[in-house]
Length: 269
Image (tube, rainbow, N blue to C red):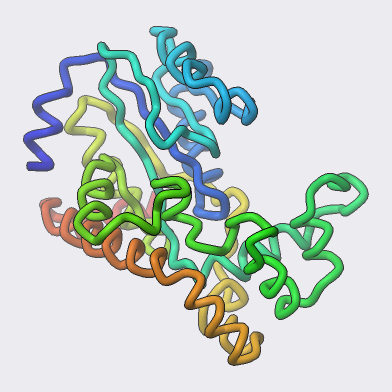
């Protein structure tokens, strides 16, 4: 079915649409897209328009020069040009692995420059235990509470059953896993080549760091058992979503011929 969809829609004008999820390796992907498409890539930061103006994305994509677009706020049900094939990119990350990464990222910012950003303010004021407690409150946004499900399905995510989640995730042309970043980029390159797009997604990491302080194992040591269990409970739907995403991802990897050789070539670039 996956290959059929590629062959079926590849004759239309193609636009890569990167649904850039916060702290999911999106900046590195954007840098690679910018390198490839140059002025034909749009890193859209007009969040208010993207969120509130239903025709905003349609207007951007109607420009025939645009070949790729990235935004942190792609609409749940976007209005898209009928003559365009959208190649959607979404990277998934284990919900608990995201937590310390979000905390450390917000903590490193200068509070004087982010006076209107509560996450930065609280991360610089609180230790990780108290920060997580604050973030888990319904008044503190959904940054570490079922984040993926909220971004993909919106406020109705709790109504979605497993089959609906599978269907939506299988519709994502380029579905990657942050914990398997190199493998994801090889999969993306191979899939894009099926659309006639030759791209090198090897790029120096941007806003990424690989260390034990960004792992769920580190988190379990730092949080009280009560806070840790509450964190798991508040990410119950997201943990299911991640497991489904991982299963789809691994299944797609198996379709790539000579995958290990291609992965080694990617690593050696």
